[in-house]
Image (cartoon, rainbow, N blue to C red; front, side, top):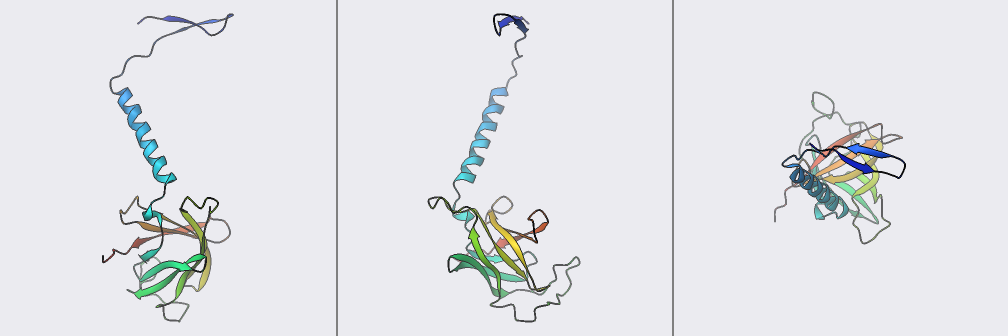
Amino acid sequence: MEWALHSLDTKQSVMTQPLPHRPGRAFGAALLFATAFAAQAQSSSPSVSSDPRGRWVTANGNLEVEVAPCGAALCGTVTRVLGNRSMAPGGGDMQAADKRPALGMTLLKDFAPVDAADPARPPTEWTGQIYNRENGKLYSCNMSVSTAGNAAGELLLHAYVGLPLFGKTQRWVRVASND
């Protein structure tokens, strides 16, 4: 290998050794660039699949919830009861603190877009409140849609008290359309 003399300034010269040629290095760099570009394009231009409106089955499979506009916000109302399993470990029968019937109950309320500054760009995250009928409590909640684990989409609901750092994320699955 040959050494080359490079002058960084007039007072000092540095000896450098050329990098060895590695086949596939350019391909790897191009692949990394293409992947980063695709990820940026996906995150900067949300598609219809990032829209949370529609029907979802809750994480424990008990309820089908329809997310739809309610005034200026989005809300989620139970449209179908599928089971009565607890969210607690073991998943036995749930003893709900709220004795009202689940059908028609609003579980998600007042979800507003987090960044609604640019009306030309659809929102990708919403913030509102989620109701846990098992313990009868209302929690702050961040909502978004992910297609990473499921092509049809998963509704990610991160419920928390105080700071989002101290919370729990549920994944609801989109109900297949009957179109």
